[in-house]
Image 1 (cartoon, protein in one colour):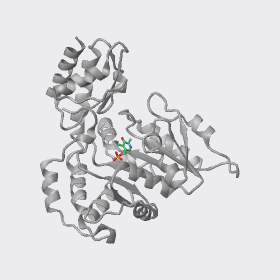
Image 2: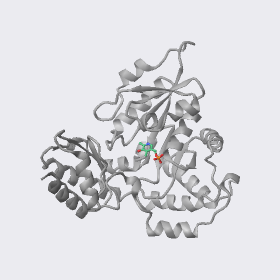
Image 3: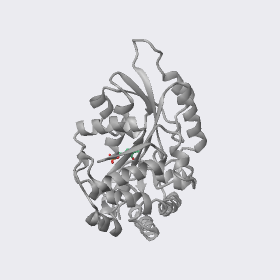
Length: 335
Ligand SMILES: *Cc1c(COP(=O)(O)O)cnc(C)c1O
């Protein structure tokens, strides 16, 4: 049982079958029918003109930032944003794009007053503020639809482009019980990870206008991300978006059950208000040796990342029975 991340999910039998039988060609020549089909279908499904299949979410985010921004431009994002904090500074290193992070509010949102104050005047002393980048879900929390509408208004008012890091955007749609387009409609570009809770082995999508995706395709080649018979991966990616989205509600129910169980454990505290989807953060009392607990769990085949707070992630390869076992073994360790 692996609670470290939803990236550990194994491809389904249907995915392996589709991968084995996918028609393929050289995608750098535009010849891979499975990639072309996925890109065209995904663009239409999410309400964008075009889409690009990428090797990872990190690459898709970097392509979005480098396609919206030129050298010396700036993007606004959260201090906790994946595309600021966890992508090795790629936008700055490879794009010469300056990040302007803003503290995330406790619910994961960015305050519009703080954002407005961070926008630079048109003056050669400053970087040019081009883009606002949001993330949904962010640390498992769902941004409300009303907030997304406000963000669109804010971006228009300040002539900014609006990007969504939607690595787990399907978790947000499922939690809100809305069609994905209720979220995607507000954005100029959006990324989706196919290889997290949606269980594809590899791959992400970048969605946007035809012009943006054409620019991103050129940069993807520059970054070494042009793939050849990538239809083998795209075939699994299509199933991620057609067969794996609705079942995310099981992961959310399991995360809720885990949060409730963890609250009963001495030395563990969880804020259940922030368990919207498949990620549970538990603060652990300093008297507990987290490394030792995680090591002991590992000897029993249960993988948990030792950190404080501990982050538990639910996904298709752990079921409600596994949650019960995890809680039982944790209680044993603590005794
Ligand atoms: C995982 C993740 C990414 C990056 O995806 P990789 O495929 O791991 O590169 C980007 N943004 C968010 C919010 C993520 O959780």
